[in-house]
Image 1: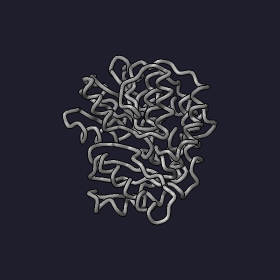
Image 2: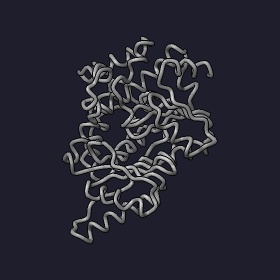
Image 3: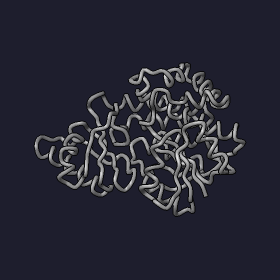
Length: 319
């Protein structure tokens, strides 16, 4: 059994999508369709930058999605592959869930692009710039990360109060957990992390504290948008971030997409759940981030990343 998976924010880079677009008319059509849906030449920004503009959440989210879908479309149209025939499940990391659902037919491409533009805008607007932060804790599991986050909040509360938010945002693999919340609490957690068992802790270059309770206004915005959006049942089930279970009911998908704005991305648990469901191969489209996480979580799973035209062609030959 096989799962197709799709990366989240942080996978963007100037030049993304250029090679795929040069190699495939199907990929070019994806970028053109996204540009038209957004009323923006996003494909030019992806190709030429500047990097700081591409990194803006409202641009990065649809760009990462477009790049991954273009890669998949090259496989499907040029390689004669149907997702439903070659994948048993889909999954995505954070915004990658929208990409996964687009790939599986729940959303069409223009709808996905517009939802991700709104999601990026709503997440950026939820917390004033500079008030939130995120940090990666390396060499710790989720339980240890929660202990570090709690210690940071308690130490600040003891000094001056009121309580600040510092919570696990992404449980990526057995040795990589991301925390999110108020900047002061995240910086305190980074300072405490090494003496509390982390090998390393570092602030992440993000513009907002994703996947924590501070994103509640963004969750409200997405709930309203998704209520106005038609969802089709996916061609194959989605392993969702918030519960790490496979779902296919459109109503359940809508609830999960709202919950993931403030909830934990349970990627490690999702990988283990896919393995327990019989998945033996995980294929990442449009990035090289998730496959290594899969291997660190479940070494027995085959995991590959597909980014370049050569990788698309090589994978097609194995199907």
